[in-house]
Each structure stands twice: as C-alpha cells, then as structure tokens.
Image (cartoon, rainbow, N blue to C red; front, side, top):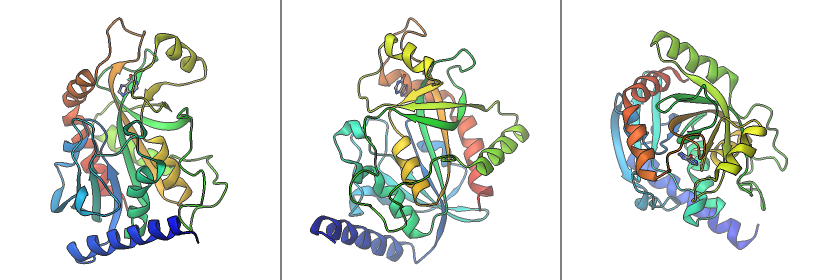
Length: 279
Ligand code: HPA
C-alpha cells in the first residue's frame, strides 16, 4: 500500500474512532445526505447528537450557502440513523476522495442504506417546481468517476456492476409510503454535471434527447460509491426550477433555495417515515 492510501486509511480510522467515542458505539442503519433545501427534512426524528464536520478528520465544511456542516445521530423506529447536514460538491474544487468519504464512513460505521437528496432542474412537462422525484437511474455527465484510481475500499471491486444503482426494493417502499401519505411522487432519470455554471438551453435540449428528466450537480458520485460498496441506495430530487430554456426565467441559487423551502412539509413527511421504516 502506498503512502497516500495509508494516510487515507488512517484518516478514516481516526474519524470512526472519534464518532464511536462520541456516540457510545451506537450502530446506525441508514445514512441520509442532505442536498440543497433538505437539511430540515429530518426534523420529525429525534436528534441524539450533533458533531460539526470540522471535528471529524475526514470530513470538512462545505462552502455552499444554504448547506450546514453537521453530522447528526438520530433515533428511528428501527434503530439509529446518520444525517449529513451538508455535502461537498466537485465544483467546490475538492477531489473525489472528499466526496467519497461520507459514504465510506457510513459503511464503516455500520450503515446498510443510503438516502441521497438534491435540488434539480426539470426538463419534461410532467415535472413541476415543488415536485419530489425518485431517481430511477442516472446518466453520469460529470466528466469523471469517483472510482478512478487506486481502489478506495477493500469491498469495492475494480469493475462494479451498475444495473441497479438505485434499489428497486427501496423505491417500492418509498412509493408505498407516498401513496399512504397522498404524496404525488414522480420518478425519472437524473443527469449529473459538475457545475457550477447552470446549463445552456442547447445543452438541455441535448440532455433531453438522451433521456434525462432532471439535471443537477451532485448525488451520482455518492450513489456510485455506495452501490460499489454493496449498500442499498435511494435518491430524491426536489424540483427547484425548470431547466435552462424550458422556462424563460434565468436561473439562480437563490431561486433553488427558495423553491425547495416550499416543499419542506412534503420532504419532512416522506423522509421521517422512510427513515423509520428502513431496516
Ligand atoms: N441545473 C443544475 N443543477 C441544478 C439545477 C439546474 O437547473 N437546479 C438545481 N440544481
């Protein structure tokens, strides 16, 4: 093992030891990563502990406005959950390792399931601002891959299968919950880009032609790492805007934040129940 891999392993080891010490060995089942506007979606769960990312060696503060930087331990009906209030994005100029770490850390702490969330722009007519969309599958247009290079964890194969990155079983569970709660959950294909610039209308026309329903700047790397680690993944987009050129309006991060806030009651109801049922 080279020096860099040794440093990476040591960084994770220290982070795991610190978290276990703080939370007296409680083993979480599910990790929830909060995308733009999703931080308050876990308010229905009992928070048992909170650690700022800066205190955990292999995590770091996000630079994105509207993203907090705390790791929470919550109690669910089936056990415990980990909440990452905030995420790092490739456009922040960090490498894949920084983006992989929350997932690898969750796996090492005992999580079997990963719930990923984001805000996204909508391409087809069936998606409207305020909708919650289950990511059925993705198109990686990030121009890179978080699994390139030295294999980052012994459980990750060199050539991971990706025929079911998003667990059909978890999608069925989320749809069942939504039906009971009368939430009109949409389902579609998420296309991920690095950002930070929003797309051009011509790019969006191109992405529509290759089957994209929603566009965003995150989620895919974490989903790929979690899938490669053998974890069960589910992901949701909150539709914060129509994609560039689909409506006349110009896009801004403020619009994204404002529009996701309006969907908070739906997110909260869905996520609380999902976290309580995930086993
Ligand atoms: N494009 C890319 N990322 C996004 C968008 C968008 O329209 N909305 C929210 N995140």
